[in-house]
Length: 111
Image 1 (tube, one colour):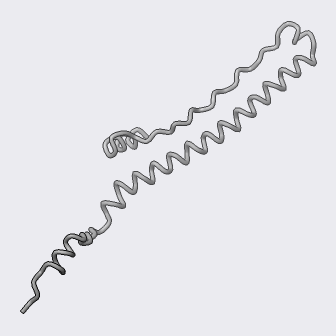
Image 2 (cartoon, rainbow, N blue to C red):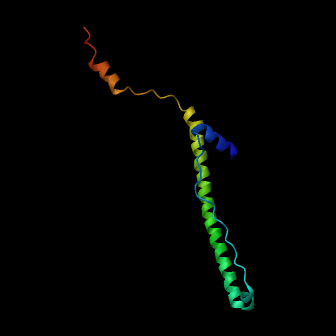
């Protein structure tokens, strides 16, 4: 991936960046003295930890999908700029309106 970033920097001045930050894993709550003493409180804390971990896994999977999509777009753009555009046949430029005006309206009639 480093070579891709370097080629982007050379081509556009800066490489496109993925601005969305990676989700942070949750900090597990540790049962205290009274939580260990009362099993219902300990079970509630364990359930909260499981729910937080599941939520993190889902958000991280979504983030990873977005990151993969971003990398796919960057690679497609790189392919367009480095392969497809240079390989395209040259296109003849259309005449500018001023050139058409001079050619057809300003030339004297042929005798």
